[in-house]
Image (cartoon, one colour):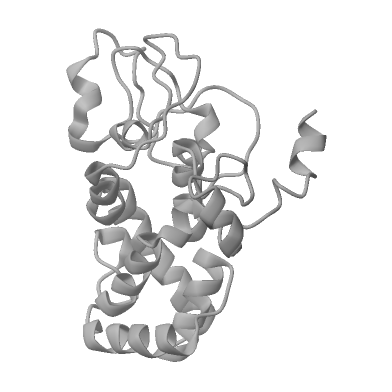
Length: 228
């Protein structure tokens, strides 16, 4: 059944499909004359951020993982060392499928994007659009940490040429080249913000604040977390 659904012409239509007559007769798309734009699930959003930074651990199978949590909140619910054993290295960057599920503690980033919470039964996962999602993608701990590595990855691949950096960042994050307007505007952004020379491991990007700003912009586009 799944194979028939995903191979159907309806499923493979783009959400940007234009049909004036269909839009007039069925503006809410109840008859599925086009694909409905869909936001990635919470797990896919986190995995995508780690992928573009080049730090996603592709290892399969094994024990549950304990990624870092913001503000040390894991310490507030511990009653023994066997609870949330935070992993800062590669094991904590495996795919979100492996994140440990604890009723008294859930990752705020995942909750913001409607990840399932194991403290109750849900027949269907909800799909919301909230300001918290934008804040998490713009200034959350996960994004702030991984965006430095994304910027450094771009610089290593593209060198010091700003236009090449913009093109490389687009290919990594959005799997397409920028159009002329995007390339011009974002190249100006990179040039206007260059100047940092600190190490990425120290909390500031060795790639420069302009390149970090470019990477932050790309992670905050609808194109990064929505499927058209």
